[in-house]
Length: 422
Ligand code: GDP
Ligand code: IMO
Ligand code: MG
Image (cartoon, rainbow, N blue to C red):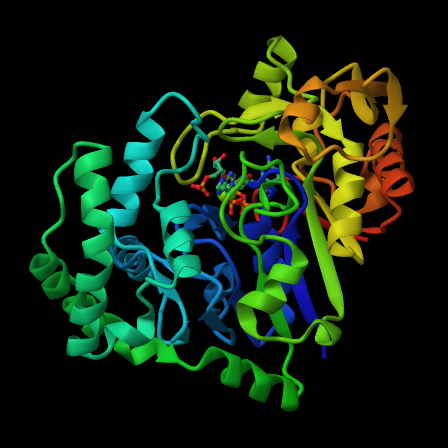
């Protein structure tokens, strides 16, 4: 039975939500393995649009058990809002499971993220969802986990300990108002009651699923180039979106993975600060942004857009070990006379096909493009490769050749059925 991982191959928002929803048709477990409510995954089906931040997109399928695994960080205020919105849309959360080892993003994490981002110097352009501070506390071993939440005394002790460290920073470094431990303990004890029915030992749940040969699909958040170690540090998130992060985040051993899907847009987008060699700041960029409705699912920010960067995509394929590619938003590229794809960087006086992850060095890289002929007609009604214009097929072929990974899914619209299975 497949144990598949869906990984963002670029800087996030590659339409992982749509691809997970499609692949979840043949999964029993859909497992979020990293990140927190910084993620925004969209699924459009039967005329309804669902937005997910923490809850796995696979939950829309009634046969799926949706798991928030220990590698995820969870903001319970955000979770409560998301759960209510999904219930309002008629989605049952009975099949949700939440790991005991999940770290909580607390109000002081969000506050610290906002205060830090308010400083101009060193700004990352985060989603201000408290992600960096939560993972920092996890690594500093003062974090609060779901397991701590379930016993009041344990919760109280953890909250008091962490606020002894975080409150002085809030007050003295940023001049902001410290948080009251008692109010926080009270509020979070309330959340404990809300999530108690879902809590379980996720590594054990998934080990049992493996023994029973159940198909498992792991849902990535963010993208490879936002990985804390392999992305464009410091303009990255604080977790591991890469495929290896799926093992760390779930407890599933690396040798159990059978399929690693890379999801890539037919062009590139990025939200927040940081180098972006193929960025377009002209009319072409505006046109792609408008056609692709490139505004953030989580923050509503306009996304930066640019041509497809094959150097970066090939790097992502090698770092993750992609066994298949899903190319998404291909429909957005209809109507351009020519399309550019970046096949090398000019860097320090020479050309290279190797991605440059060091942010200041990447900022100095100039893209080397090849131009490919575009196609005029809209393709959102195409359902097979043969129906695509020849130039669209040639564009896909160019990606496959360069990256060395077969394209097995092509998305030509946001709806579930606007998909070509190769
Ligand atoms: P994720 O974070 O990777 O799940 O991606 P997002 O949901 O943040 O962003 C992808 C956006 O593109 C969403 O609004 C989707 O509904 C939309 N979308 C997905 N696939 C396609 C496609 O093939 N064509 C177009 N035009 N839009 C798509
Ligand atoms: P999905 O799962 C796109 C970006 C932020 C910022 C950097 C750090 O929808 O693809 P953070 O809040 O994580 O500390 O911000 O990472 N970022 C994303 N960009 N899609 C996402 O998630 C992102 N999650 C974080 O814009 O540049
Ligand atoms: Mg998104």
